[in-house]
Image 1 (cartoon, rainbow, N blue to C red):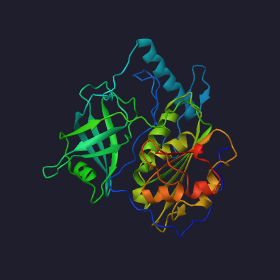
Image 2 (image 1 turned 90 degrees about the vertical axis):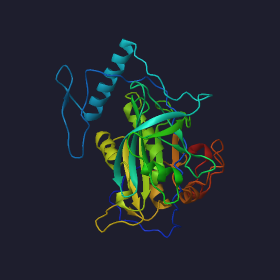
Image 3 (image 1 turned 135 degrees about the vertical axis):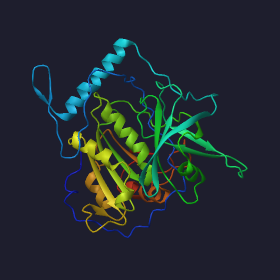
Image 4 (image 1 turned 90 degrees about the horizontal axis):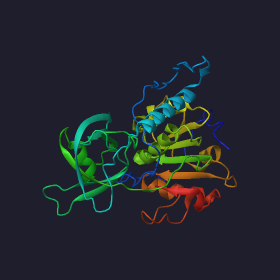
Length: 344
């Protein structure tokens, strides 16, 4: 079941649910540890499909392909080219006793009033990477600050790694990052393997995110749709304070327009504008009843990532990075089991 009907036309919903508190510079640890073939350069490429913009793609016989099919053909062609050339990519971060790796900040892009996109360059432009820890020690700090971050770039993007990071007033790492200038350097360590994903592992997944908790969700969604053999259906439920706080909205719109039968996004705002037409308030049981598969259905997974208040309301907190803790909150009340839910 890909439950997503009726919500778009529903009236905005306001709920007196306890306000979610933003985590102080804690971006959720981890990302899917997806192991699949590295993609290299190929002669064939496809232009991304924008909102209300469609291109026609043709096979050798002149038959018209949908945008999704064309993208899949391009990905298969690229994968074939890499396989035939024997190309392989080296991961910058190998774990174990490797230690910390110093990277140069290549560029900074301001996304909104408190969020920036950071691109760090690898020494070898063919290298790739996954989720990481960062380390910074200020001149007056007794101990260094270490924080986990999930990249928004693909794991097989060569030569760089991107992060979307929100600045918190009393967050030492996010504050330091927001003060950094291109060509300055920061220490990283990794990778951090989390939920092991393989193509078609589940028929349908639902991503429930709040604030910067969207980053591991985005990486998982992109990995699914970048793999032509993966037919998983994806529903995103994303809560934020205001419309300008919605990170990666354009990227999710691209996915929704390219894969309308497989991807759908629903947004909830705590402080909507007068022109906002979707849900208001916090992510609540009424919305989740509309978009989630029934608990009795088979082979689906619900992923949760966000600030502590959202975890408590939706699924309960994790006990540790290796202990998912008890399933509580709305998902437990709706009859889902701990095996059906994963907390990033």
